[in-house]
Image 1: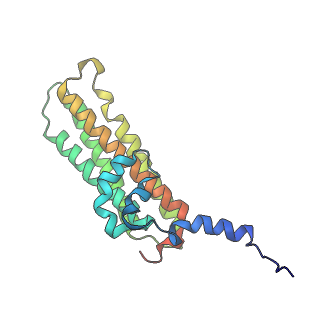
Image 2 (image 1 turned 120 degrees about the vertical axis):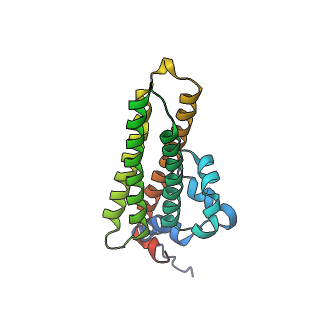
Image 3 (image 1 turned 180 degrees about the vertical axis):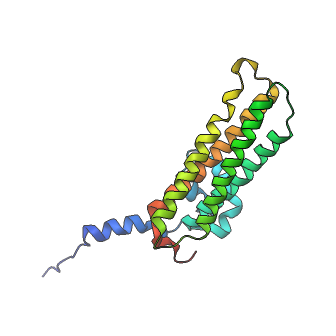
Length: 192
């Protein structure tokens, strides 16, 4: 006589897939690679977030915080570079850029503050706010270079372009990590 085999309900299977990052973490040193797999610039992500691997492990919320922390550091470096640059020709543009970078830093610090205090009951609203602030930071970073005329870009402007682009890439990665956190839901906050 054959035993009847029971199959799990489709809803249970769907829940398991959604919760997979919580219950089936990456193994060993693959934590950072697993976290960065959702980003647009995974190589940069792995390089910049590797130091967090032993503490973030398989926690989407810790990876999101690490991504925003790294972004804050990168944006601060660009802002410092801009503030130190003296140019009569680009005085107004540089002033606007410094102001925009300060707004970006404000959004990043708000994001990090919320990520440090995530609550299961307010999770959706909190992650929504963080996503909005990071998206605004990303948009602002993309407009910083508009005041530099393409034909007049010398080595110094090229260096600035590279720095701003790197800050943009790191911000994009942080946003991807927050989006990954959003898809895992508040169930992953238990041990954070």
